[in-house]
Length: 52
Image 1 (cartoon, rainbow, N blue to C red):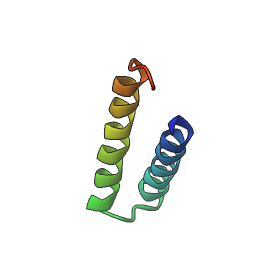
Image 2: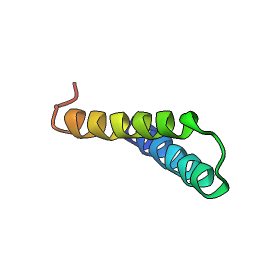
Image 3: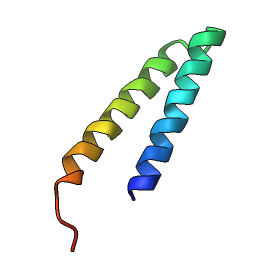
Image 4: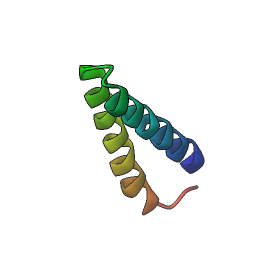
């Protein structure tokens, strides 16, 4: 599950950089950045929990 989250973060970051460089996407770039930030916070919160 952690690998999946980090994969999503890397993909979203790459899309953000492409949108920033090529000046495309408009509001979509900001939405992707917010989703990536939420995933990072989720990862830090769930890292401390013990798995069953």
